[in-house]
Length: 68
Image 1 (cartoon, rainbow, N blue to C red):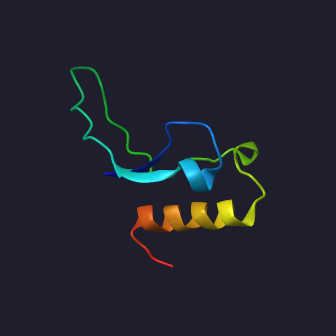
Image 2: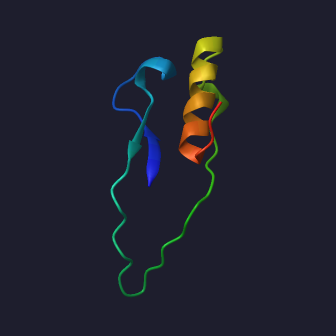
Image 3: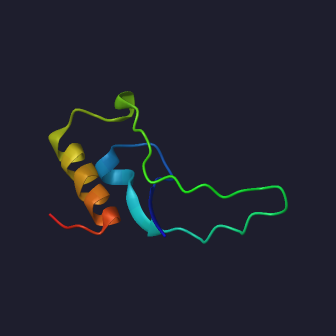
């Protein structure tokens, strides 16, 4: 499974990376596993920089398996 992660504070173009995420463990007794296909992005977490927005769009497209 691919995911977009960051390990430090900074401009999205500098800190966001597409990586392979480890597999999730199987749910135990009395537990369920829910697959979320989308997540909200808080507008305050994005900068107004065109370069950063373009990088974020490219990362999202790469994660979804599409290309620019």
